[in-house]
Image (cartoon, rainbow, N blue to C red):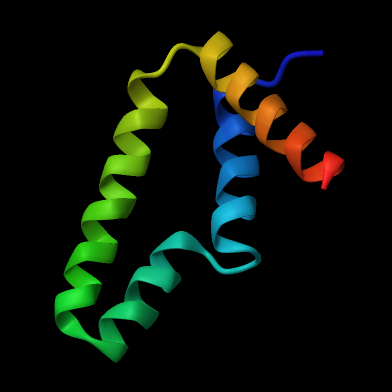
Length: 73
């Protein structure tokens, strides 16, 4: 069963940010260090750009591969 682009984004966000909203994560990092917060904001922008430009099939394969590796640990 394949996952949609929106589902892939949600799964990757959960994997990366755990239960924290990605924007909240950026704000938390910004609160610790404005320089690191700027980098965190850029990182989140790049994450969203990659999700947008990546074909759904490749995202599906990526998510499945990552979760399979986690299950194998």
